[in-house]
Image (cartoon, rainbow, N blue to C red; front, side):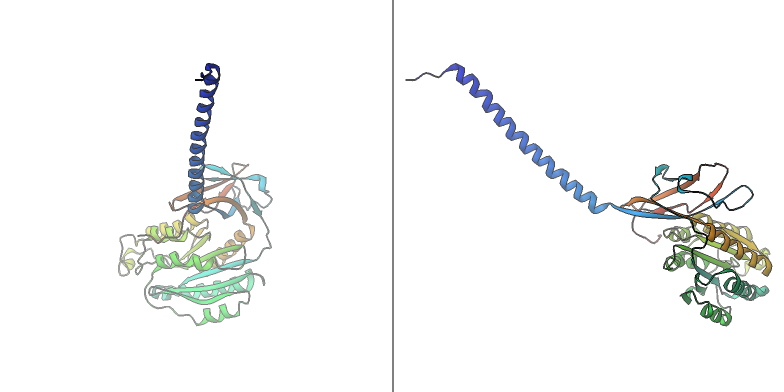
Length: 333
């Protein structure tokens, strides 16, 4: 019988061990690779890169618009994390897409509020907007928001419909603010805005002011509010009151919130001259806007992400929308 060479056996066992170990590791790495690929697919399925666009207004301490900034002068943060600016635009002559959201409820017939609003809007159409600017008109009363005039650079239809509009019914202000930004976002120009003119009386909405804001800020549309002849007499407000928030101070607070949350501005006026001046300031600000863009990601958490924009010069006042939701649009409960 032959003998087993001990030297060969000593070499043979390590070889078997290495082969066995190699096969096990190969299987482990293969499993890990498959698991990583599956995870990658799940992440790809649930998370997608998206472009975030923000309109930014910059003023100095005296309220003068700053118009000479470059991309390098801005810093953008999302949830306090810095973001690279991937898009920058600043063109004073760029055309606007402006949606006017006009309160035509019954209270607007009092104190000539609706008639004065019409005169001011005629001034906006004929003297402030350019031929390239497009405008649309939404009117609201009795729980309905009507597209009275669709987007057009021809202001004729807007003025014609405006002239025929009469006041009627109750005021679902919060509901109108909630649904209108989606329509305003359909404008054809990069610079878009929603202009709300109202006396602030609210007595017919399903939404609360906070719910209206939550819906409105899902769209990158700044809301400029003009509170025209807000009632100061609490006795007068009593006959319209459906909520304890319907006070003069409550109206001011709601209108300011609508604007602050979306990057717009609120004005409060008492006569036609002030109303016209407010429209001039809105047009001026929109013309001076900077448009910044950066990339982020969407996911199914639908979290609210805060946006902060600052400039190199800390004394400048920067205004933009407060943030956005990361997932699909969902109506508030």
